Image (cartoon, rainbow, N blue to C red):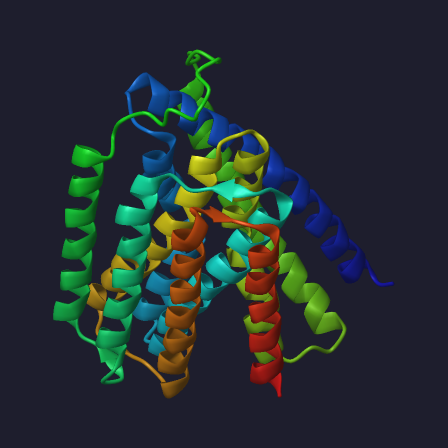
Length: 309
C-alpha cells in the first residue's frame, strides 16, 4: 500500500470521527438556543440546521454555476435531495421509529412536495432562468416567514431538562465548521481511494461524492435522533430538501442562468416519486417505521443499479 492510499485511509477515518463529534455539538447547541428563544426544535431543524448541513451543496452548486457547469449544478441539487430522502431519512428510520408531529405533516411535508413540484416545472424546458431563480428564492423567504410566525411554539415532546449554556453559540458555530470541513475532507479522501481502485468518474460522482456531500445531513440526523431530538432529525432532512431547491438552485440560477440535461429532469421525476411515497407513509400513520426506512434505502440501491446498467 503506497503512502497516498494510506494517508487517504487515515483522513477518511479521522473525518468520520470529527463529523460525529461536530454533529453532536451542533445539534445540542441548536436545540438549547431554540429553547432559549422559544422556537421549536423542528423549526430549528428546518432552518438553522438545514442551512448548516446544506453548505457543501451550496458551495458546490454556486461554484459550478460560476464556472459555467450548469449540468453539474442542477444535478447536484437533484441528486442530493434524492439521497437525503432515500438514504439519510431511510437510515435514520432504520435506527429508530420516527413519530412525526401533525403540524409537520400539514405544513412541512406539503412544502417539500410543493418545492419538488416546482422543481419539475422549472426543469421542464431544460433550463432555469434568472427570473425563475429569483422566484425560487422569494418562495423560500415566504416559507421562512410563515414558519417563524406560525411554527415557533416549542415542541411539547422535547424534554426541557437541560438549561441553555453560556457558550452555546460558540458550540453551534464550532460544531458547524467541524461538520462542513470534515465532510469536505471525507469527500476528498473517498475520491482518492475510489480512483486508486479504478472506479470511473461517473461512479465516483454518483456514489462517493453524493455520499460525502450529504454526510453532514446524515450525521446530524442520526445524532439528533439518538439524543431524543426527533424534530431536529426530520426537520433537517425536510429543510435541506427545501433549501436545496429554493435557495441553492435559486441562488445559482440568479447568479447565472442554468441549463439542465434530460437526465436531470428524469432524476427530478424519481425525486417526485420518492417524495410522494414519503408523504403517503407519513400521512398513513404519522410515523416512519423500519420497513418503510428499508424501502427508502432499497430504492436508492435500485436507482444505482438502473443508472449503472
